[in-house]
Length: 446
Image (cartoon, rainbow, N blue to C red; front, side, top):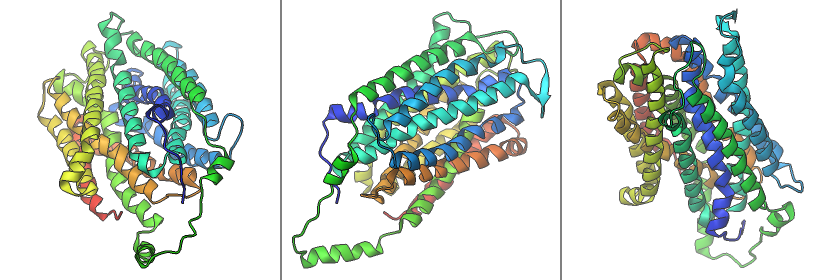
């Protein structure tokens, strides 16, 4: 059994601090990609196709990073080299992507109805999500590598806090820059400066945070990890023998993978529709416009960042309450299901709200589901992998339960939009997907 030493709160914080910067980049991508491509001229029925690239790259990259880093050791560590390389690429792409409309490529259609600016944006988006995935996965793996079971809940709660704090900052950047007087409108086909500057500042914070983690975290060497493995030669009591025998009845890693993956399928498909259609839904519901070149649409784009920030705040608050709620309900699975139901209510309520401030209440409820999605699947799955030397590989494969549903949701997005008739209708659909995920939670066996 692995006997990893206890880490101080500072060490646990340092272990995940770079995640703050990575999440700013991810939040900027999540809140602004639909806005960017709509500004470049994409039809609403095309928007979901632009979202295929991020999960596709995550599904390809994360298992590879997990497999390679399991076998890596150098003077800089095991996971950190991949973290640093991913961050460097992400910084470069964050400077490129928001300038897609400023290179004179918006007028001519190149292929498949896409302009040169859209193709440049797609290429930049592919590189950005690849690099974010390269940088993000090592943080999850380092917690698995370096934190013992007694401290794992604390470590993941710190990581969740930093994740959501980074999200708040990234989501609010365009709104803050607009408040400071930076232009929030631009010529047709050009990304507003409020978005461009947000990506620039996010890139700077990302690299500083990653450098901090790189300097302050020293990963265990293979020899140290081997030394933490000890054999207990004390004869086992009858109670202990019975306890060991009972583990034969525990669910296999495959069953755990599939059952959690089923819940993940509905949840991440719902989130894909949130990221894709929130801008259009909020613009039509609260600003009464679908004109992507109007000032109202761009104001709605800023407010999407505010709503997503409220969602992140809701996730932070709900994360703090999860242990108490699980205890009160006497079941982590019941808490998981309740969280998803609240998120579903939040999505469905957007159909009935026309006030921009009240829409934030809907997204606060979605934050409850988001907190559960960041915590419970990894707790359930990593507990099934205790002491497994292929932790990184398995976590990389587990990421497919996040990416595959997003890809399928993106492929079907245009057809479903035509069926439901509006972008806010897609958010209502996301709510029912959360309800389905909540029902599937009870298939999970701990």
